[in-house]
Length: 249
Image 1 (cartoon, rainbow, N blue to C red):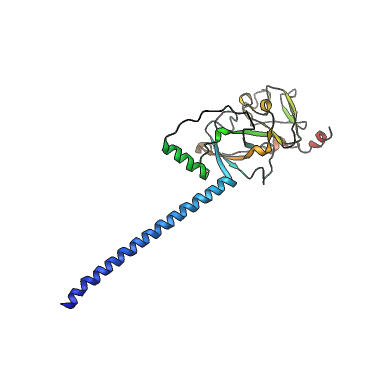
Image 2: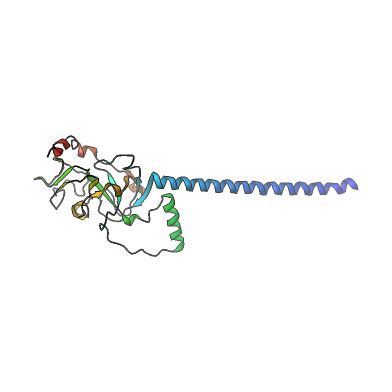
């Protein structure tokens, strides 16, 4: 009788120990998941803050290279660690009065929360409307002139064949507005690829390099539009060599 009575007590103890062990394992699992999520958010935040981030395209000024609602990934190491180059597609904050202020559209709380979380990790860009995207044409000290008898723009006296312009090859001039500019130090001359529908340096002046957020290097969304963004180095071939004659002016 004594031995039989002791058996259920031992079984109950084993059951209690097993349940405690399972609870402890579940808590450890939840702890590990929480640490992984926190680490992922922290890494994403660091990447977004210092390396890359996403923007969407709100206007047609860069068509057909970039169209409205494209998502682009921007290398934020430019220009602090990686030098700017002519032909780069650059993102910059509004230097002042380039953009017309837009009223902020109300969002459902869940959508706003998701947008906020996405902005922290660099997956969304709620401030895209406060930035502009253009192609870099002239670096500090360059002389940019348009147009010659063939309708071409030139940099430091070198005529440019620009395949990225919307309607390239149609015989239309590179710009409907003639201009000549010696790009001041610390600034850039930028233009949209959709030259007839772009409010750029022709109308607003140069962009301070300090306003540049980075260089766009890929279209990430929609998937059917995924492509690397070229800066067309052959278009600007010989421009640096011709710079000496500009410096001697």
